[in-house]
Length: 365
Image (tube, rainbow, N blue to C red; front, side):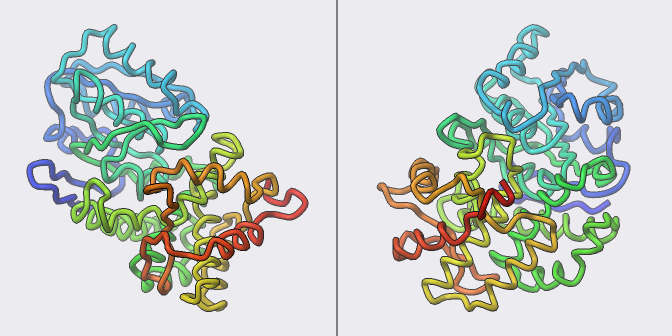
């Protein structure tokens, strides 16, 4: 097992990464507050891992709430199922919530924990690659709205993140690739040497080689932990983690939540950011080709859906959380491994980028 830390003073917490971690009471005990534990999972993950996870909480009053699986259920209506479970079992303000599942479960459980009785403890046990390398770390929690992704939420840090890499054995190939989209992001924003490592070993990651998967998770989590420690509430450097997300969130919202996986949409967004950076004179054509090849090798799409025209992109990007004073802020590249946030780009270049990266005749719809 490898343990990293997110350094946030009194709110610092560990990230445990390894095999056979589900059910280990020694890992959860330091993170549990009170005597009541509510495990939140979904109807895909619960049949696979709920009983293993419950074993770690055998010394507590342990209940569970099972949510429907899918991004389309990440909303206030489903969130109320968690509150209903907590209230019906008379959970007090010293209880602990546990998120057992992917990013949707983690985001919703964290948001419920932030809200219930004005804030209770929670633990992240992510079971998808995307959640393990990204959404479980950093304390961003929330739900979607019909007009925008993750527009309702709160910053609420977990007490611990427990990553059992064995849970990836039951993850389908499409979800694995979606997680690789977020892994690729870390190389593109800060660590080009990590991008080159991914270029060399993508086949091993797709084959789920445990040593290479563990190394990718560890590198990604360390990058995320360092950024969050430096900028918890996203007032500066943390915004770099949004590379590809303005475009990607527009795709997810515009196509209907759940039709495109988050990592798929972000992958296209990262490539669009590279195209725009090239048009602005910062990247070369070879740089853009490197990004495209890496995304393609991860079995991720490289074009936005044909249904997403320029007007629809702009409509949805206008309500993105990163808009400031009516100006769209995008994460672009000075070079691969050197990302920055800016609203100073030629609008014509943005329009041409969006039009260039739409699929033709419904490809990748």
